[in-house]
Image (cartoon, rainbow, N blue to C red; front, side, top):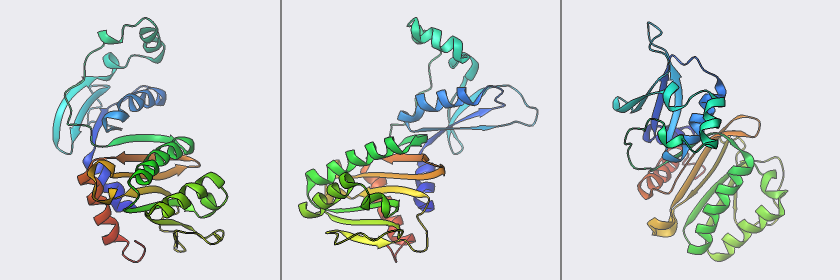
Length: 243
């Protein structure tokens, strides 16, 4: 899934915080606020190590604006006080960014991943057609969850071309959908769901995530039809033997 993740990262806007001298908690606060706008947060340093805590919004070399992190995201105690007092509107505004095409969510829990997947699975069930590719890392994830197994049986019965991927740590008995055993562990660290919408742009959806700590994922998801089409094309090109 590396090729798909690289495609999504290339599309998203980045906030680079230069010479950050705050806490990891503050970076997490910033990331949580900006995730819904498709903005990933990273840090970097300049040769002189100054100015401190300067945030620059950019897509590659294209810069959209800058903000003082200290002013926009004060210390956590002060920020909580501002929220409690309803004074967040007094904080400096953010630059105008491109339209929200991708959601970026670092440190995504397994529970949230399931919620996002369920939403996209419902889109496929309503459409009752098209192709859905779902990677669960290990086949036991679907075999040992009665609810997940039921969802994918219903999708297949509704007419969706379902392909489930995972490391073969168990056997899935008599599935009505196609099971692709990832014996080479190409997808062992990735949770993904791609749905082509059956030709309906309003139903297309994609979620691609990489587990970097146990049960914590760097996640990207989108319902932009052009991006979803690109991801399908990439998947067929990069993993022709599996897709």
